Length: 290
Ligand SMILES: Nc1ncnc2c1ncn2[C@@H]1O[C@H](COP(=O)(O)OP(=O)(O)O)[C@@H](O)[C@H]1O
Ligand SMILES: [Mg+2]
Image 1 (cartoon, rainbow, N blue to C red):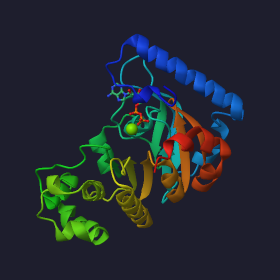
Image 2: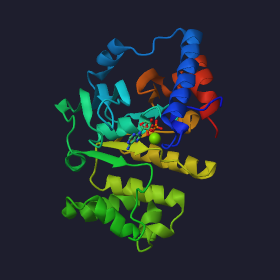
Image 3: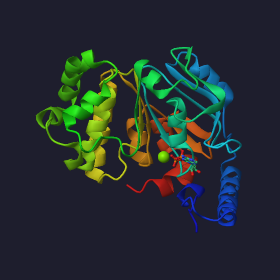
């Protein structure tokens, strides 16, 4: 049972089993907090840092069912051009945080802003036109459509952009241009990720949200995806990336957040987090399987 966290549990466990697992998790956490003595969250540092940020999530409380909060006061910001990573145990609420930023999970309290404009609970399709792109973890391509058609779907709200954006995306990912007529369903996992990211780039987003782009990929393909993410970021796109490959994620990101039980646990530069003994002990030991 050691290392088993609530998020690892299938949804059909009995309430009793789940409670037991949550107790074990709470005990592990308490032990961890006693061990480190660290502050779990630093609001002042967040408020200070968020001042000039492009996108900010401030004190978010959100969940899927009324009365059950998955995010329990979560903060995040990213400066224009930054590559920000979010790591944390299974079930910590990482995907929920991205979905809350993208209008897919209702924010009950707190605020999301993009360039100082309040976008809390704005619908996803509107956020796309406002410059936010989102690549979900799974089912992120249309398998029966060709690569080109998938990219077309990426800018169905602005079809006039297609030619210019198709040129941009295939310049970044030449393989997508070369194989434009191939169905996405025939591609490897790594290639599909390129299509999914390419699709999200078709609307020329200022912020790209990526949910575990390396999920299910071999270490070699993971490296390739991370190189691609870096390249996208180098074109000026602000990237917020959730990753299970915590160590590798921290290696490439400018700043990172460790999320635990819907709350910010640690934050810092990728390097600072990757070398922080507390973070290593609590989050990198079991997470860094790669
Ligand atoms: N659609 C959903 N409906 C209800 N609960 C959900 C849903 N999606 C996720 N959850 C729950 O929210 C919690 C956080 O999940 P998630 O954000 O996916 O975590 P992570 O991405 O960090 O693994 C988990 O307890 C999970 O069971
Ligand atoms: Mg997730």
